[in-house]
Length: 301
Ligand SMILES: Cc1cc2nc3c(=O)[nH]c(=O)nc-3n(C[C@H](O)[C@H](O)[C@H](O)COP(=O)(O)OP(=O)(O)OC[C@H]3O[C@@H](n4cnc5c(N)ncnc54)[C@H](O)[C@@H]3O)c2cc1C
Image (cartoon, rainbow, N blue to C red):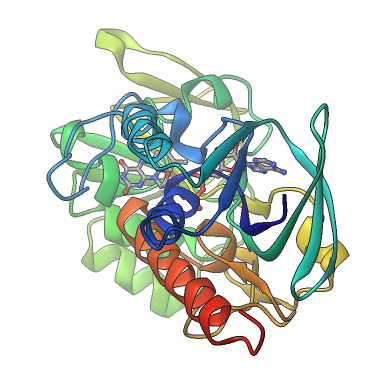
């Protein structure tokens, strides 16, 4: 049976859109491969009324609530291709064949790619962190590192300085310009040149940042701006317009989260330069409203 909408990605954005469509009694299929971006962190913070709850738990609860709506179908798996035009899209899912729908929502998120430094990736979401607003409070002050990965890392270090005593490890990045150096000085950020060779466990569960020259620095946490990449190639294959941001390429959307391709919507980290659970949930709600309105007011609905 043709669905009103298929949502590719059942994370925070996708499920938020699903509530809107389910409550409008529209037939919606959510395809999800079960790997939300924050799965590495045991707790999520700053989410209204849910501070400290794990992201996976929030999603599990939302899925259970959505499953109670008779027009919602969940498909566990990876959507590997999508094609079609307004009112006639087809999405194929390995092991589940092809599913048809009038609208598509791309809510598949982004992937964080970390620098290839031994000891970094296994600590991601625990003591190697992406955002002080999400996890800075729990560090409780003290020595904190920021690993430079891009020119904006100096700004990140200046921000993180509100959460502790920051050392910016330049790791081969060019020395910041004078204005930035002055900002770092005002924010009491220490600049540490040299290449980072490994992240180890230091004393008292601290992280030990070891430089190639042998010097070591113990910090309570290390912030890293990962390279963000949209997941999969479905958006490109459909011809959706993309735009460059300092955080990487994202999908271009309008006020109701419609992409440049008629009938295709996008919400979540794949369609905004900075995402967190609340922001992408709001995007999902907006996409759900946009899809519903377009289904209602299309001439033959
Ligand atoms: C380590 C870490 C900790 C974080 N902590 C916080 C926090 O404490 N508070 C906060 O507000 N924010 C936090 N964030 C940010 C937050 O996780 C993201 O903003 C949010 O997950 C983005 O939601 P999304 O729905 O766009 O994508 P995701 O949550 O990543 O969900 C995308 C979903 O799509 C699925 N998917 C992808 N491709 C396909 C496909 N082809 N077919 C089917 N399914 C597919 C994935 O499996 C996934 O389930 C954190 C991020 C990281 C990296």
